Image (cartoon, rainbow, N blue to C red; front, side, top):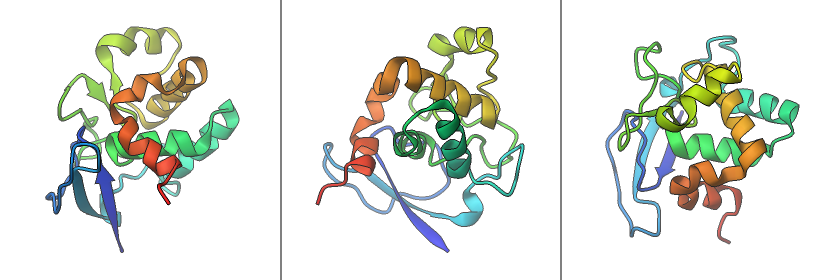
Amino acid sequence: MASLIAVTNITPTTAGVPVSTATADQVEVAQLVTESEVAPTQSNSDLSIPELIAIHSKEQGVDVKLAQAIAFCESTNRQFIDDNMTPLRGLHNPLDVGIFQINEKYHLEKSQELGFDIYTITGNIDYALWLLKNGGSRHWNWSRPCWSQKINPVA
C-alpha cells in the first residue's frame, strides 16, 4: 500500500522523487512513499510513529492531531535514515534532528538537562511534546503552512 505525502518548502530528507510542484503558498512537493519506508520504533516495532505520538501526547496533555501533523510535515514520521540507526537530519539545516526536526543549536542542551535524548524515537517525541506544552507550536513556524492544513483542511 502506498501513501501520498505532501510536504512544504522545508522538504524533509526522505526517499522518493518529487512528482509535482505548486506555488510557494501551497504544497510544493509530493512524494510517493510506501509503507515499508516508515521506520519501526526502537521500543515497540508493533506501534507506528503516529501511534506513539498519540499515546505520548495523551499522557502529556498535548493536542494529538497537532503533534502528529507537525511530525508528519517535519520528517514524514521518520526518526532515522534508511539504515534505521542514523538520525534523520534536516535537508535545509543539518542541525535539525529526527521526527520533530529538533534543532541541536537551540535545544540539545535543554533537552539533555530535562533528560531527553533527541536522537532516539521516544526522546525526540517527548522533548517535542514538552516544547509544545511549554511554548506552543512556535518552534515549528517554518512548517506551519503544511501542518496547519493538516489540522484545518480547506473545504
